[in-house]
Length: 452
Image (cartoon, rainbow, N blue to C red; front, side, top):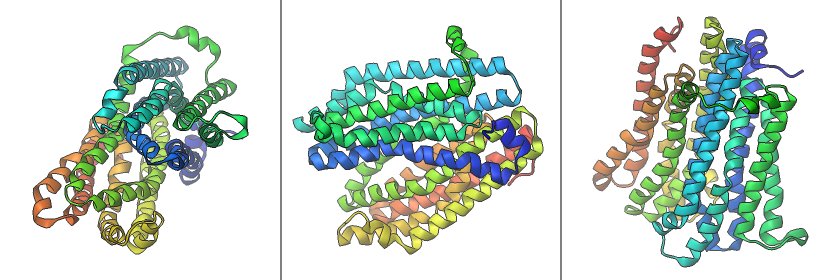
C-alpha cells in the first residue's frame, strides 16, 4: 500500500520511515548524475575533442541542475508544511508557483544558451573544433533544459506527498531512456543516423523530457492535483518568495561546486598538473559517499516539514537525531575506505605512479573531514526545513570558499601541494563547529528540542 508523508510521520517508526522514504531518493540522485556520466562514457570513444567538449559543458549543466534543484527543494519544504497543516488550497498554490518558477528558469537558460554559448566556450579555448562541438552539445542540452527542470520539480512534488517509489520511477525512466538512446544516436545503431556528440545531446534531452512527462502522469494518477490546476496558473509573489527563500541556498551550494572546480583547477595547475587529475578523481569518488547522505537529507526534509506544520515536536527531535546518526555512520564508513583503500580506488582510473602517490596522500588527508562534513551537511538540511536559509548559505560558503581558498593562497608557496588537502579538512572542521553553534542558536526559537 502506498503511503502519504502524513502516514510516514504519523504511523510509522521513524527508523523504518527514514529508510523507506530515503532509499528511493538516493537512487533518484544517482539516476540524475547518470545523465552526465553516461554521455561522457559514450562520447569518450569519439575522440579527445568530443570528450573535452562534454567536460567544458559540465559546469553549465550543473548550474541548470542547481536552478531546478533549488526551486524543487524550496517547493518540497514549503509544500510539506502545508500538507502537515492540511491546507489543500495552499498546497495547490505552491505547486502552481513552483511550475511558474521552473518555467521562468527555463526561459532564462534558453535565452542565455542561444546567445552566450559560443562566448562561454571561447573563454576557455581557442580550438575551433572543440568550440564547435561544445556549441552543438551545450545549445541542445540548455535550450531544451525544460525537461530536466520539470523532471526535478515533479520528483520533489511526489516526494512531498510521500510518493517516493513514484519519484524513483520518474528519475530511473529518464536515465534508462538516455542510456538506451545514447549508443543508438551517437554511433548510428539500429538504422539510426550517426550523429556523434549531437546524438548524445539529443538522447539526454529526450530522456529528460520523457521523465517530465512521466512525472505529470504520476502526479495526475495519484490525484495530487487534477488538470483544473492549470486553469489556476496565477503567480503569487509571496508563495514564490517562500519557495526561493528555502531553495536559493541549494541553488548556490550546487552552483558553487562548479565554480570551485574551475577555481581550484586554476590554482592546482600552477603547482602541479598531476594534482588536477588527483582532485578530479577525488571529486568523482567522494561524490558517491555524500550523495547517499544527501539522499537521506532529502528524505528527512519532507518529514521535518510535515512535522513542523503539524507541530509534532517530539517527532522533529527524533527525526533530526536519527538522520544525524545515519549521516555519521555513512561518513565513518567512507572515511575508513578512503584511508585504508585509496590505492584501490585511484587505481580504477588507470593513472600513472606519480598520480597514484599524490592521490594516496590526498585521499587520506581529505578523509579526515568526512565526519565534520556530514555534520554540516545534515544541519544545513535542518536549517532549510526550519526556513533558516541564510544559515545554510553561511555553511556552504564557509566550506567551499571562505576558509579553504584563503588558506591555500596564503600557504601554498611555503608548504606546497599538501596544504591544499589540509585546507579542505580544516575548513570542514571549522564549518561543523559553526553549524553546531547556529543550530543551538536557532533550535530554541523553532521548537523545544535538545541540541545535538
